[in-house]
Length: 160
Image (tube, rainbow, N blue to C red; front, side, top):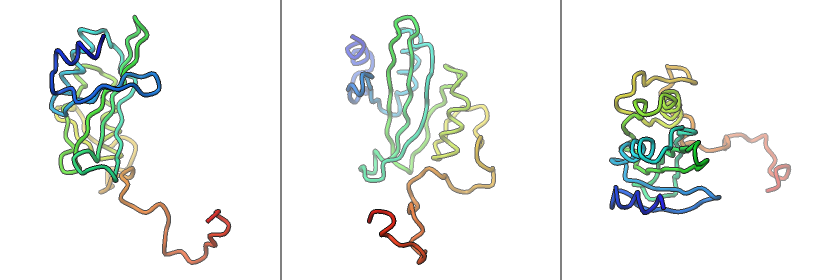
């Protein structure tokens, strides 16, 4: 079983192993996520990076507020897995995996562009979808969803 092989190889760096919606999900320490991805590609046949994306959980404890998720696919066995790593806002740096998967190039740039994650060793860590002049990261949950200064809204029309 893959979870057992990962636990044997990475020990305590594998924080937990769960299953969400028929996907095995493995949470790794940030320092070992690149090594785990390298191992999964070269030893377990996960030769396709489907997704790399970031997210923020503002209600989580500060050390787990931000997350990067990698989804890998093994075409031979048609297995798909997710790898996650969590971190605080003060330390949004990871190692690039562009040397493992070419497709990570734009995905890492998108995670930088929207959340502010930086990937050490990335060949072109610049914004990809937003203007270069932006001095904030638009998908961080640091702004209210509504403009509370508006007085022309009537809440009865919004089911409140």
